[in-house]
View 1: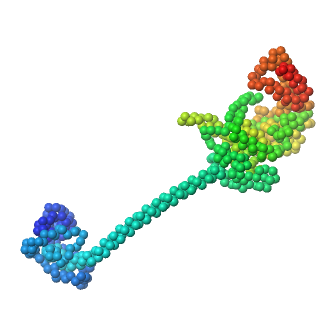
View 2: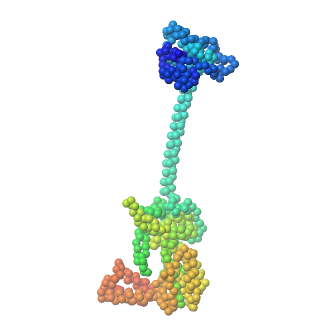
View 3: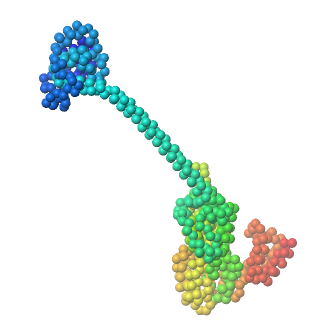
Length: 538
Protein backbone atom coordinates (compact mmCIF):
# COMPACT_ATOMS: atom_id res chain seq x y z
CA UNK A 1 0.00 0.00 0.00
CA UNK A 2 1.31 3.44 -0.97
CA UNK A 3 1.61 6.48 1.22
CA UNK A 4 -1.51 8.21 -0.11
CA UNK A 5 -3.56 4.99 0.21
CA UNK A 6 -2.26 4.73 3.69
CA UNK A 7 -3.14 8.34 4.53
CA UNK A 8 -6.57 7.89 2.92
CA UNK A 9 -7.32 4.82 4.88
CA UNK A 10 -5.94 6.28 8.05
CA UNK A 11 -7.67 9.69 7.95
CA UNK A 12 -10.89 8.76 6.13
CA UNK A 13 -10.15 10.79 2.97
CA UNK A 14 -10.65 9.89 -0.70
CA UNK A 15 -7.95 8.89 -3.14
CA UNK A 16 -8.45 12.11 -5.10
CA UNK A 17 -5.06 13.74 -5.63
CA UNK A 18 -2.96 10.52 -5.38
CA UNK A 19 -0.34 10.62 -8.10
CA UNK A 20 1.84 7.93 -9.66
CA UNK A 21 5.39 8.02 -8.18
CA UNK A 22 6.78 7.01 -11.56
CA UNK A 23 5.22 9.56 -14.00
CA UNK A 24 3.29 11.93 -11.70
CA UNK A 25 -0.12 11.26 -13.30
CA UNK A 26 -3.03 11.25 -10.81
CA UNK A 27 -4.59 7.83 -10.21
CA UNK A 28 -8.22 7.39 -11.08
CA UNK A 29 -10.58 6.73 -8.16
CA UNK A 30 -10.28 3.04 -7.20
CA UNK A 31 -7.68 2.25 -9.87
CA UNK A 32 -4.89 -0.13 -8.94
CA UNK A 33 -2.54 0.85 -11.76
CA UNK A 34 -1.53 4.11 -13.29
CA UNK A 35 -3.43 4.90 -16.48
CA UNK A 36 -0.35 6.49 -18.05
CA UNK A 37 2.57 4.15 -17.28
CA UNK A 38 0.75 1.13 -15.65
CA UNK A 39 2.78 1.56 -12.43
CA UNK A 40 1.17 -0.33 -9.46
CA UNK A 41 -0.45 1.90 -6.87
CA UNK A 42 1.57 1.96 -3.59
CA UNK A 43 4.80 0.48 -5.05
CA UNK A 44 7.82 2.86 -4.78
CA UNK A 45 9.55 3.75 -8.00
CA UNK A 46 13.01 2.42 -8.66
CA UNK A 47 14.07 5.38 -10.80
CA UNK A 48 16.74 7.66 -9.32
CA UNK A 49 15.53 10.68 -7.42
CA UNK A 50 15.79 13.92 -9.44
CA UNK A 51 16.43 16.88 -7.23
CA UNK A 52 15.16 20.38 -8.02
CA UNK A 53 17.74 22.94 -9.24
CA UNK A 54 18.29 24.30 -5.77
CA UNK A 55 19.15 20.83 -4.39
CA UNK A 56 21.69 20.08 -7.12
CA UNK A 57 24.31 22.13 -5.29
CA UNK A 58 27.19 20.56 -3.50
CA UNK A 59 25.66 21.41 -0.16
CA UNK A 60 21.99 21.79 0.77
CA UNK A 61 21.04 25.41 1.52
CA UNK A 62 18.78 25.46 4.62
CA UNK A 63 17.28 28.91 4.26
CA UNK A 64 15.20 28.69 7.41
CA UNK A 65 17.36 26.49 9.58
CA UNK A 66 15.62 23.24 8.63
CA UNK A 67 17.68 20.10 9.00
CA UNK A 68 17.21 17.18 6.65
CA UNK A 69 17.95 14.86 9.59
CA UNK A 70 14.50 15.67 10.96
CA UNK A 71 12.93 13.73 8.14
CA UNK A 72 14.07 10.27 9.26
CA UNK A 73 12.35 7.41 7.49
CA UNK A 74 9.28 5.89 9.13
CA UNK A 75 7.65 2.67 8.16
CA UNK A 76 3.95 2.36 7.53
CA UNK A 77 3.51 0.25 10.66
CA UNK A 78 5.24 2.88 12.84
CA UNK A 79 3.08 5.60 11.28
CA UNK A 80 -0.09 3.67 12.02
CA UNK A 81 1.00 3.05 15.58
CA UNK A 82 1.87 6.72 16.12
CA UNK A 83 -1.45 7.87 14.76
CA UNK A 84 -3.36 5.27 16.74
CA UNK A 85 -1.63 6.37 19.95
CA UNK A 86 -2.20 10.10 19.23
CA UNK A 87 -5.86 9.70 18.24
CA UNK A 88 -6.17 13.43 17.23
CA UNK A 89 -4.31 13.57 13.90
CA UNK A 90 -7.29 12.93 11.54
CA UNK A 91 -6.99 16.24 9.69
CA UNK A 92 -4.59 15.54 6.83
CA UNK A 93 -7.06 16.51 4.08
CA UNK A 94 -8.20 19.73 5.72
CA UNK A 95 -5.17 21.67 4.53
CA UNK A 96 -5.69 23.80 1.37
CA UNK A 97 -4.02 22.44 -1.75
CA UNK A 98 -2.42 25.81 -2.53
CA UNK A 99 -0.44 25.96 0.76
CA UNK A 100 2.63 23.96 1.79
CA UNK A 101 1.89 22.71 5.37
CA UNK A 102 3.98 23.72 8.37
CA UNK A 103 6.74 21.10 8.95
CA UNK A 104 6.46 21.47 12.73
CA UNK A 105 2.96 19.96 12.83
CA UNK A 106 3.01 16.35 14.15
CA UNK A 107 0.71 15.04 11.41
CA UNK A 108 2.87 16.67 8.77
CA UNK A 109 6.00 15.17 10.30
CA UNK A 110 4.44 11.71 10.24
CA UNK A 111 3.41 12.14 6.62
CA UNK A 112 6.85 13.44 5.62
CA UNK A 113 8.74 10.69 7.36
CA UNK A 114 6.42 8.02 5.96
CA UNK A 115 6.93 9.40 2.42
CA UNK A 116 10.71 9.16 2.99
CA UNK A 117 10.32 5.64 4.38
CA UNK A 118 8.35 4.55 1.30
CA UNK A 119 10.98 6.06 -0.99
CA UNK A 120 8.63 8.60 -2.51
CA UNK A 121 10.84 11.55 -1.70
CA UNK A 122 14.25 12.27 -0.21
CA UNK A 123 14.94 14.26 2.97
CA UNK A 124 16.75 16.90 0.94
CA UNK A 125 13.75 17.41 -1.31
CA UNK A 126 11.43 17.72 1.67
CA UNK A 127 13.80 20.25 3.20
CA UNK A 128 13.68 22.35 0.03
CA UNK A 129 9.88 22.10 -0.23
CA UNK A 130 9.32 23.21 3.36
CA UNK A 131 11.85 26.00 3.05
CA UNK A 132 9.83 27.32 0.12
CA UNK A 133 6.67 26.92 2.17
CA UNK A 134 8.10 28.87 5.11
CA UNK A 135 9.28 31.63 2.75
CA UNK A 136 5.83 31.75 1.17
CA UNK A 137 4.27 31.99 4.64
CA UNK A 138 6.52 34.93 5.48
CA UNK A 139 5.60 36.87 2.36
CA UNK A 140 1.99 35.77 2.19
CA UNK A 141 0.82 38.94 3.82
CA UNK A 142 2.85 41.03 1.41
CA UNK A 143 1.39 39.03 -1.46
CA UNK A 144 -2.12 39.72 -0.19
CA UNK A 145 -1.33 43.40 -0.02
CA UNK A 146 0.25 43.26 -3.47
CA UNK A 147 -2.73 41.30 -4.82
CA UNK A 148 -5.15 43.80 -3.32
CA UNK A 149 -3.08 46.66 -4.69
CA UNK A 150 -2.98 44.94 -8.06
CA UNK A 151 -6.74 44.46 -8.03
CA UNK A 152 -7.20 48.11 -7.13
CA UNK A 153 -4.80 49.11 -9.91
CA UNK A 154 -6.68 46.91 -12.35
CA UNK A 155 -9.97 48.43 -11.24
CA UNK A 156 -8.54 51.94 -11.55
CA UNK A 157 -7.17 51.04 -14.98
CA UNK A 158 -10.56 49.77 -16.01
CA UNK A 159 -12.23 52.90 -14.69
CA UNK A 160 -9.67 55.08 -16.48
CA UNK A 161 -10.22 53.18 -19.71
CA UNK A 162 -13.97 53.50 -19.30
CA UNK A 163 -13.57 57.22 -18.60
CA UNK A 164 -11.31 57.66 -21.64
CA UNK A 165 -13.76 55.70 -23.76
CA UNK A 166 -16.65 57.84 -22.56
CA UNK A 167 -14.56 60.96 -23.20
CA UNK A 168 -13.78 59.79 -26.73
CA UNK A 169 -17.46 59.08 -27.31
CA UNK A 170 -18.40 62.54 -26.09
CA UNK A 171 -15.64 64.13 -28.20
CA UNK A 172 -16.86 62.21 -31.26
CA UNK A 173 -20.40 63.38 -30.59
CA UNK A 174 -19.18 66.98 -30.26
CA UNK A 175 -17.24 66.64 -33.52
CA UNK A 176 -20.28 65.21 -35.29
CA UNK A 177 -22.44 67.99 -33.92
CA UNK A 178 -19.88 70.64 -34.88
CA UNK A 179 -19.60 69.13 -38.36
CA UNK A 180 -23.38 69.08 -38.74
CA UNK A 181 -23.56 72.71 -37.63
CA UNK A 182 -20.74 73.66 -40.01
CA UNK A 183 -22.53 71.90 -42.87
CA UNK A 184 -25.77 73.66 -41.98
CA UNK A 185 -23.99 77.04 -41.91
CA UNK A 186 -22.24 76.30 -45.19
CA UNK A 187 -25.47 75.18 -46.84
CA UNK A 188 -27.11 78.41 -45.67
CA UNK A 189 -24.26 80.65 -46.83
CA UNK A 190 -22.47 78.84 -49.66
CA UNK A 191 -22.92 76.43 -52.57
CA UNK A 192 -20.32 73.70 -53.03
CA UNK A 193 -22.28 71.03 -54.91
CA UNK A 194 -24.95 71.28 -57.60
CA UNK A 195 -25.06 67.75 -58.99
CA UNK A 196 -22.80 65.22 -60.62
CA UNK A 197 -20.79 66.34 -63.60
CA UNK A 198 -21.46 70.08 -63.17
CA UNK A 199 -19.91 70.98 -59.78
CA UNK A 200 -16.22 70.95 -60.71
CA UNK A 201 -15.68 74.70 -60.64
CA UNK A 202 -17.72 75.59 -57.55
CA UNK A 203 -14.62 75.69 -55.33
CA UNK A 204 -12.83 78.27 -57.51
CA UNK A 205 -13.88 81.82 -56.57
CA UNK A 206 -11.27 83.71 -58.59
CA UNK A 207 -12.88 86.31 -60.87
CA UNK A 208 -11.26 88.56 -63.45
CA UNK A 209 -12.25 91.86 -61.86
CA UNK A 210 -10.55 93.99 -64.53
CA UNK A 211 -12.51 92.30 -67.32
CA UNK A 212 -15.77 92.63 -65.41
CA UNK A 213 -15.14 96.32 -64.89
CA UNK A 214 -14.26 96.79 -68.55
CA UNK A 215 -17.57 95.20 -69.57
CA UNK A 216 -19.47 97.17 -66.90
CA UNK A 217 -20.76 93.94 -65.35
CA UNK A 218 -21.62 93.22 -61.69
CA UNK A 219 -18.46 92.23 -59.84
CA UNK A 220 -19.37 88.86 -58.29
CA UNK A 221 -16.92 86.17 -57.22
CA UNK A 222 -18.76 83.77 -54.90
CA UNK A 223 -22.20 82.14 -54.68
CA UNK A 224 -22.97 84.25 -51.60
CA UNK A 225 -22.31 87.46 -53.52
CA UNK A 226 -24.46 86.20 -56.41
CA UNK A 227 -27.26 85.40 -53.95
CA UNK A 228 -27.15 88.94 -52.60
CA UNK A 229 -27.01 90.49 -56.06
CA UNK A 230 -29.96 88.46 -57.36
CA UNK A 231 -31.88 88.79 -54.06
CA UNK A 232 -32.37 85.03 -53.95
CA UNK A 233 -31.52 83.11 -50.73
CA UNK A 234 -28.78 80.54 -51.02
CA UNK A 235 -31.09 77.53 -50.45
CA UNK A 236 -33.47 78.79 -53.15
CA UNK A 237 -30.63 79.51 -55.54
CA UNK A 238 -29.28 76.00 -54.98
CA UNK A 239 -32.72 74.55 -55.68
CA UNK A 240 -33.09 76.47 -58.95
CA UNK A 241 -29.59 75.60 -60.22
CA UNK A 242 -29.31 71.99 -58.99
CA UNK A 243 -28.87 69.37 -61.70
CA UNK A 244 -30.32 65.89 -61.34
CA UNK A 245 -30.58 63.11 -63.91
CA UNK A 246 -34.02 62.02 -62.70
CA UNK A 247 -35.75 64.57 -60.42
CA UNK A 248 -39.35 64.43 -59.34
CA UNK A 249 -39.81 68.16 -59.94
CA UNK A 250 -38.63 70.28 -62.89
CA UNK A 251 -38.52 74.02 -63.38
CA UNK A 252 -40.04 74.10 -66.88
CA UNK A 253 -43.40 73.50 -68.51
CA UNK A 254 -42.87 71.88 -71.92
CA UNK A 255 -45.19 71.86 -74.91
CA UNK A 256 -44.92 71.54 -78.67
CA UNK A 257 -45.94 73.82 -81.55
CA UNK A 258 -46.00 72.98 -85.29
CA UNK A 259 -43.14 74.12 -87.52
CA UNK A 260 -43.75 75.82 -90.89
CA UNK A 261 -41.51 73.26 -92.53
CA UNK A 262 -43.28 70.37 -90.86
CA UNK A 263 -42.77 68.55 -87.61
CA UNK A 264 -43.11 69.85 -84.07
CA UNK A 265 -40.99 72.30 -82.13
CA UNK A 266 -40.47 71.71 -78.40
CA UNK A 267 -40.80 74.81 -76.23
CA UNK A 268 -39.92 75.04 -72.53
CA UNK A 269 -41.39 77.80 -70.40
CA UNK A 270 -39.67 78.32 -67.02
CA UNK A 271 -41.65 78.58 -63.80
CA UNK A 272 -41.99 82.01 -62.23
CA UNK A 273 -39.07 81.78 -59.78
CA UNK A 274 -36.63 80.58 -62.43
CA UNK A 275 -37.98 83.08 -64.97
CA UNK A 276 -37.26 85.87 -62.48
CA UNK A 277 -33.68 84.70 -62.03
CA UNK A 278 -33.18 84.45 -65.80
CA UNK A 279 -34.61 87.92 -66.29
CA UNK A 280 -32.03 89.30 -63.83
CA UNK A 281 -29.23 87.59 -65.74
CA UNK A 282 -30.52 89.02 -69.03
CA UNK A 283 -30.87 92.58 -67.77
CA UNK A 284 -27.71 92.81 -65.67
CA UNK A 285 -25.24 90.72 -67.66
CA UNK A 286 -26.24 89.54 -71.14
CA UNK A 287 -27.84 92.77 -72.37
CA UNK A 288 -24.60 94.64 -71.65
CA UNK A 289 -22.57 92.53 -74.07
CA UNK A 290 -23.03 93.41 -77.73
CA UNK A 291 -23.22 90.55 -80.22
CA UNK A 292 -21.42 90.55 -83.56
CA UNK A 293 -22.54 93.17 -86.09
CA UNK A 294 -23.66 90.40 -88.43
CA UNK A 295 -26.21 89.10 -85.89
CA UNK A 296 -29.69 90.58 -86.26
CA UNK A 297 -31.86 88.13 -84.34
CA UNK A 298 -32.87 88.96 -80.74
CA UNK A 299 -30.94 92.23 -80.83
CA UNK A 300 -32.67 95.47 -79.78
CA UNK A 301 -33.08 97.80 -82.78
CA UNK A 302 -32.62 94.97 -85.28
CA UNK A 303 -35.15 92.71 -86.96
CA UNK A 304 -35.78 90.58 -90.01
CA UNK A 305 -35.93 93.85 -91.94
CA UNK A 306 -32.40 94.92 -91.00
CA UNK A 307 -31.24 91.35 -91.64
CA UNK A 308 -32.61 91.46 -95.21
CA UNK A 309 -31.44 94.95 -96.18
CA UNK A 310 -27.79 94.04 -97.04
CA UNK A 311 -29.07 91.51 -99.60
CA UNK A 312 -31.50 93.75 -101.59
CA UNK A 313 -30.78 93.71 -105.36
CA UNK A 314 -28.16 90.93 -105.17
CA UNK A 315 -27.57 88.65 -108.14
CA UNK A 316 -27.26 85.55 -105.97
CA UNK A 317 -28.65 84.89 -102.48
CA UNK A 318 -27.66 81.80 -100.46
CA UNK A 319 -29.64 80.80 -97.36
CA UNK A 320 -28.17 78.25 -94.92
CA UNK A 321 -29.94 76.88 -91.85
CA UNK A 322 -28.22 75.47 -88.75
CA UNK A 323 -29.77 72.29 -87.40
CA UNK A 324 -30.93 72.19 -83.76
CA UNK A 325 -29.46 75.60 -83.03
CA UNK A 326 -30.44 75.98 -79.35
CA UNK A 327 -29.96 72.28 -78.34
CA UNK A 328 -26.45 72.45 -79.85
CA UNK A 329 -25.42 75.18 -77.38
CA UNK A 330 -24.73 72.98 -74.36
CA UNK A 331 -23.95 73.72 -70.72
CA UNK A 332 -20.18 73.68 -71.31
CA UNK A 333 -20.44 76.33 -74.04
CA UNK A 334 -22.64 78.57 -71.91
CA UNK A 335 -20.22 78.12 -69.01
CA UNK A 336 -17.43 79.25 -71.33
CA UNK A 337 -19.35 82.43 -72.20
CA UNK A 338 -19.67 83.48 -68.55
CA UNK A 339 -16.04 82.54 -67.87
CA UNK A 340 -14.95 84.66 -70.86
CA UNK A 341 -16.86 87.63 -69.44
CA UNK A 342 -14.64 87.47 -66.32
CA UNK A 343 -16.75 85.57 -63.80
CA UNK A 344 -15.21 83.01 -61.49
CA UNK A 345 -15.81 79.30 -62.22
CA UNK A 346 -18.16 79.11 -59.23
CA UNK A 347 -20.39 81.99 -60.36
CA UNK A 348 -20.17 80.97 -64.04
CA UNK A 349 -21.30 77.45 -63.13
CA UNK A 350 -24.37 78.70 -61.29
CA UNK A 351 -25.29 81.14 -64.07
CA UNK A 352 -24.88 78.45 -66.72
CA UNK A 353 -27.07 76.03 -64.75
CA UNK A 354 -29.77 78.67 -64.38
CA UNK A 355 -29.79 79.24 -68.15
CA UNK A 356 -29.70 75.61 -69.36
CA UNK A 357 -31.83 72.52 -68.99
CA UNK A 358 -31.68 68.91 -70.17
CA UNK A 359 -34.37 67.39 -72.40
CA UNK A 360 -36.46 65.14 -70.20
CA UNK A 361 -39.03 62.39 -70.48
CA UNK A 362 -41.47 61.51 -67.68
CA UNK A 363 -41.14 57.99 -66.31
CA UNK A 364 -42.99 56.16 -63.53
CA UNK A 365 -41.19 53.96 -61.02
CA UNK A 366 -42.71 52.49 -57.88
CA UNK A 367 -45.69 54.77 -58.14
CA UNK A 368 -43.53 57.92 -58.43
CA UNK A 369 -43.07 60.08 -61.53
CA UNK A 370 -39.50 61.01 -62.45
CA UNK A 371 -38.29 63.24 -65.28
CA UNK A 372 -35.31 61.41 -66.74
CA UNK A 373 -32.74 63.38 -68.72
CA UNK A 374 -32.44 62.14 -72.30
CA UNK A 375 -29.59 64.40 -73.35
CA UNK A 376 -27.09 67.02 -72.12
CA UNK A 377 -28.08 70.36 -70.67
CA UNK A 378 -28.48 73.06 -73.33
CA UNK A 379 -30.32 76.31 -74.03
CA UNK A 380 -34.09 75.74 -73.71
CA UNK A 381 -36.34 77.32 -76.33
CA UNK A 382 -38.54 79.48 -74.15
CA UNK A 383 -36.07 80.97 -71.67
CA UNK A 384 -35.48 84.72 -72.05
CA UNK A 385 -31.71 84.21 -71.77
CA UNK A 386 -31.40 81.70 -74.61
CA UNK A 387 -31.44 84.19 -77.56
CA UNK A 388 -28.80 86.48 -76.06
CA UNK A 389 -26.58 83.55 -75.08
CA UNK A 390 -26.89 82.04 -78.56
CA UNK A 391 -25.64 85.30 -80.07
CA UNK A 392 -22.68 85.38 -77.67
CA UNK A 393 -21.81 81.76 -78.37
CA UNK A 394 -22.01 82.40 -82.14
CA UNK A 395 -19.77 85.48 -82.12
CA UNK A 396 -16.75 83.50 -83.31
CA UNK A 397 -18.95 81.80 -85.92
CA UNK A 398 -20.12 85.20 -87.20
CA UNK A 399 -16.58 86.53 -87.28
CA UNK A 400 -15.32 83.62 -89.35
CA UNK A 401 -18.33 83.58 -91.66
CA UNK A 402 -18.03 87.30 -92.32
CA UNK A 403 -14.31 86.87 -93.00
CA UNK A 404 -14.76 84.18 -95.65
CA UNK A 405 -17.71 86.09 -97.18
CA UNK A 406 -15.73 89.32 -97.53
CA UNK A 407 -12.76 87.43 -98.94
CA UNK A 408 -14.97 86.03 -101.68
CA UNK A 409 -16.92 89.29 -102.23
CA UNK A 410 -20.14 88.26 -100.51
CA UNK A 411 -22.36 89.94 -97.88
CA UNK A 412 -23.23 88.00 -94.69
CA UNK A 413 -25.92 88.33 -91.99
CA UNK A 414 -27.37 85.92 -89.46
CA UNK A 415 -30.80 85.86 -87.84
CA UNK A 416 -30.78 83.17 -85.12
CA UNK A 417 -30.08 79.94 -87.02
CA UNK A 418 -30.58 81.43 -90.53
CA UNK A 419 -27.37 82.40 -92.31
CA UNK A 420 -27.74 84.58 -95.41
CA UNK A 421 -25.08 85.30 -98.04
CA UNK A 422 -25.43 87.45 -101.17
CA UNK A 423 -23.23 88.76 -103.98
CA UNK A 424 -23.48 91.08 -106.94
CA UNK A 425 -21.91 90.25 -110.25
CA UNK A 426 -21.00 87.03 -112.01
CA UNK A 427 -19.23 85.13 -109.22
CA UNK A 428 -21.12 81.90 -109.49
CA UNK A 429 -17.94 79.91 -109.65
CA UNK A 430 -17.28 80.66 -105.97
CA UNK A 431 -20.67 79.31 -104.73
CA UNK A 432 -19.46 75.71 -104.34
CA UNK A 433 -16.33 76.81 -102.50
CA UNK A 434 -18.41 79.12 -100.29
CA UNK A 435 -20.82 76.32 -99.33
CA UNK A 436 -17.91 74.01 -98.49
CA UNK A 437 -16.29 76.64 -96.29
CA UNK A 438 -19.62 77.30 -94.57
CA UNK A 439 -19.91 73.60 -93.65
CA UNK A 440 -16.32 73.43 -92.39
CA UNK A 441 -16.59 76.57 -90.27
CA UNK A 442 -19.94 75.48 -88.83
CA UNK A 443 -18.47 72.09 -87.87
CA UNK A 444 -15.44 73.74 -86.26
CA UNK A 445 -17.73 75.96 -84.17
CA UNK A 446 -19.90 73.08 -82.97
CA UNK A 447 -22.85 73.56 -85.34
CA UNK A 448 -24.30 71.48 -88.15
CA UNK A 449 -25.65 72.72 -91.48
CA UNK A 450 -29.15 71.51 -92.37
CA UNK A 451 -28.58 70.54 -96.01
CA UNK A 452 -32.32 70.23 -96.69
CA UNK A 453 -32.82 73.94 -96.06
CA UNK A 454 -29.81 75.21 -98.00
CA UNK A 455 -31.05 77.34 -100.94
CA UNK A 456 -29.29 79.15 -103.77
CA UNK A 457 -31.58 81.87 -105.28
CA UNK A 458 -30.85 83.56 -108.60
CA UNK A 459 -31.91 86.95 -109.88
CA UNK A 460 -34.56 85.49 -112.19
CA UNK A 461 -36.56 84.02 -109.26
CA UNK A 462 -38.01 85.32 -106.01
CA UNK A 463 -35.19 85.90 -103.56
CA UNK A 464 -36.13 85.92 -99.87
CA UNK A 465 -34.21 86.42 -96.65
CA UNK A 466 -35.90 85.56 -93.34
CA UNK A 467 -39.32 85.67 -95.01
CA UNK A 468 -38.87 88.98 -96.84
CA UNK A 469 -38.49 89.40 -100.60
CA UNK A 470 -35.24 91.19 -101.53
CA UNK A 471 -35.18 91.16 -105.36
CA UNK A 472 -35.55 94.92 -105.90
CA UNK A 473 -36.78 96.19 -102.55
CA UNK A 474 -37.79 94.70 -99.24
CA UNK A 475 -41.36 93.46 -99.19
CA UNK A 476 -43.39 90.65 -97.77
CA UNK A 477 -44.34 87.90 -100.23
CA UNK A 478 -47.32 88.65 -102.45
CA UNK A 479 -48.96 85.46 -101.20
CA UNK A 480 -49.17 86.86 -97.66
CA UNK A 481 -50.75 90.17 -98.78
CA UNK A 482 -53.21 88.45 -101.11
CA UNK A 483 -54.29 85.99 -98.45
CA UNK A 484 -54.91 88.74 -95.90
CA UNK A 485 -56.79 90.84 -98.49
CA UNK A 486 -59.06 87.88 -99.31
CA UNK A 487 -59.81 87.26 -95.62
CA UNK A 488 -60.88 90.87 -95.09
CA UNK A 489 -62.93 90.90 -98.32
CA UNK A 490 -64.94 87.81 -97.35
CA UNK A 491 -65.26 89.09 -93.79
CA UNK A 492 -67.38 92.00 -95.07
CA UNK A 493 -70.09 89.50 -96.04
CA UNK A 494 -69.55 86.52 -93.68
CA UNK A 495 -67.94 88.12 -90.66
CA UNK A 496 -64.38 87.98 -89.41
CA UNK A 497 -64.83 84.94 -87.19
CA UNK A 498 -66.02 82.84 -90.13
CA UNK A 499 -62.64 83.27 -91.82
CA UNK A 500 -60.71 81.58 -89.00
CA UNK A 501 -60.11 78.34 -90.89
CA UNK A 502 -56.84 77.60 -89.07
CA UNK A 503 -58.55 77.92 -85.68
CA UNK A 504 -56.33 80.62 -84.22
CA UNK A 505 -57.29 81.18 -80.54
CA UNK A 506 -57.10 84.97 -81.03
CA UNK A 507 -57.87 85.41 -84.72
CA UNK A 508 -58.35 89.21 -84.82
CA UNK A 509 -55.08 89.75 -82.90
CA UNK A 510 -53.34 87.48 -85.38
CA UNK A 511 -54.69 89.52 -88.31
CA UNK A 512 -53.56 92.81 -86.72
CA UNK A 513 -50.12 91.36 -85.97
CA UNK A 514 -49.73 90.25 -89.59
CA UNK A 515 -50.68 93.73 -90.79
CA UNK A 516 -48.08 95.23 -88.45
CA UNK A 517 -45.48 92.85 -89.90
CA UNK A 518 -46.38 93.99 -93.42
CA UNK A 519 -46.16 97.61 -92.27
CA UNK A 520 -42.39 97.26 -91.63
CA UNK A 521 -41.63 96.78 -95.32
CA UNK A 522 -44.77 98.09 -97.11
CA UNK A 523 -46.52 100.78 -95.02
CA UNK A 524 -48.97 101.77 -97.79
CA UNK A 525 -50.32 98.25 -98.26
CA UNK A 526 -50.51 97.78 -94.52
CA UNK A 527 -52.58 100.95 -94.12
CA UNK A 528 -55.15 99.79 -96.67
CA UNK A 529 -55.44 96.41 -94.92
CA UNK A 530 -55.78 98.05 -91.50
CA UNK A 531 -58.64 100.26 -92.79
CA UNK A 532 -60.47 97.20 -94.12
CA UNK A 533 -60.00 95.37 -90.80
CA UNK A 534 -61.43 98.28 -88.83
CA UNK A 535 -64.57 98.23 -91.01
CA UNK A 536 -65.29 94.51 -90.47
CA UNK A 537 -64.33 94.50 -86.79
CA UNK A 538 -66.53 97.48 -85.82
